[in-house]
Each structure stands twice: as C-alpha cells, then as structure tokens.
Image 1 (cartoon, rainbow, N blue to C red):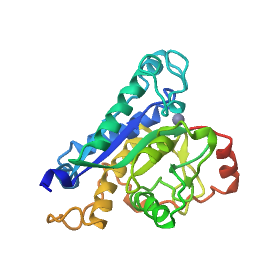
Image 2: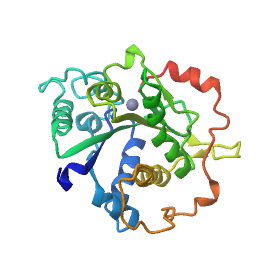
Image 3: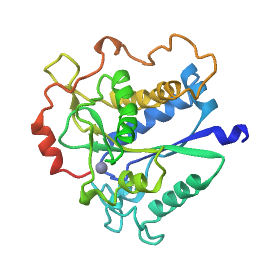
Image 4: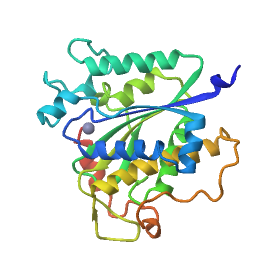
Length: 271
Ligand SMILES: [Zn+2]
C-alpha cells in the first residue's frame, strides 16, 4: 500500500432543498475554514480530501423554490435511482460518490448533507440505524465531538432513524451503499435560533453564526482523526478554538428546552 491509499475522503453536499438558505452559510463556513491558513485546516488538508457540492439544486435556488427543482422534484427523495434527464445534478453527484467509493486510493469515510430545519432549534444531526451496536456507537462519535466544539450544536436533538419516507434521502441511500466504516449524516440547522447551554433564551441565528457552525464542523474532523490516530504529525498544542468572534465562554449546548415536544414535531417534518 502506498501513501495515497491512506487518504480519507469527506463528501459534503448542501442546498438540495433550495429554500434552506442557512445550509449555504454553514457550507461557506466549512469552505472558508478549510482553505484558511489556520493550523488545523493545514493539517486537515494534508490528510483528508474534501469534496464539497455547495448547491445540489441550483435551478430550484434560482427560481426561489422552497423544496423542489425546476421540474418539480424533491431531489432528496430520488437518490435511489436518479435520472440524468430529470435529476441531472443528483445523478452526477451520485455517480461521483459511487466512483470515489470504488477508488482504491481513497476511503470515503463521511458523507454529510446540510439542511435547515423549520421547527427545531439548534444544529443537530440525523443518522442511520444499524443492528450492530458497535457501529451505532461509532456513528455517534462525530456528533458528540461536534457538540463539544459548537455552542449551538445539540446532541440531544440528534436522532437516528429508518423511516420509510426518508428512504430516498442522500443520508439513507448512501448509508446503505457505503461500507460499514463510513458515516452518513444529515446536518440540520434551525432556521431561527439556538439555545446556549444554561440559558433559557433562544439566540437568533445570523449569517455569521451559521458560518461559525460550518467552521466548527470542519475543525471537528481533526478531533475525529486524532482520536482515530490518522494524524501523527506534530499537531500544535493546544489547538485553539477557531472563532472570529468571542464565542468561547458559551460552551456547548445541552439542548435545554428541547424536550419530547420538539421530537414529536420532528416526526411530522421532512428533511
Ligand atoms: Zn431539507
């Protein structure tokens, strides 16, 4: 095995639902951080390949649609069999993911699809359900690490499901396609607010705080890979929390105020 065969690959997509504009700011935060001179970003670039599709539904965005493409399709229900004619962006991205998954030089380890949620607070994730308990635990590692890094990310809002209605989503379909060392998530961020830890007052999101969530997602990959011994370089210590604004005193959220009511509401809501 040569050095290339060790390369991990992270695949990120966003804006499959054109009305979910916060997803674009989160994605922008990821990109801005990864191309920056921050030492964490430099280490990540040395070890991990990031493939990012910032807008899966450009025609829907152009038209100002809320959920569908130009032709009226909810693209996040067509991952199983996208048509090159009816769902061209999805077809092309799926082809690329399948191709990367077969490439012996890379290991496609993460797929994350970014959305915005119209009823829940905070950032949170959806993951898949597996029979294998060890795999379930491994899947929870990334959201747990993200929860430590992002004051607006809630692990308690994060849930794992296998609803029939979501079978055609990127997360569900790719979860079945990729091997059992891969992780597929939907990353959701509230359209409205997040609840900081220890506070009972929701803080409205801004473009900057959406982008900060993206930054925190990106730097969490280093925490993950350090945990998994991928990076043996001299990692600068301590790795400073990367933030362009004074957010550090807030700590992480515990999703306070997010009880079963929101969880019930989630069941009725699509992503
Ligand atoms: Zn969505």
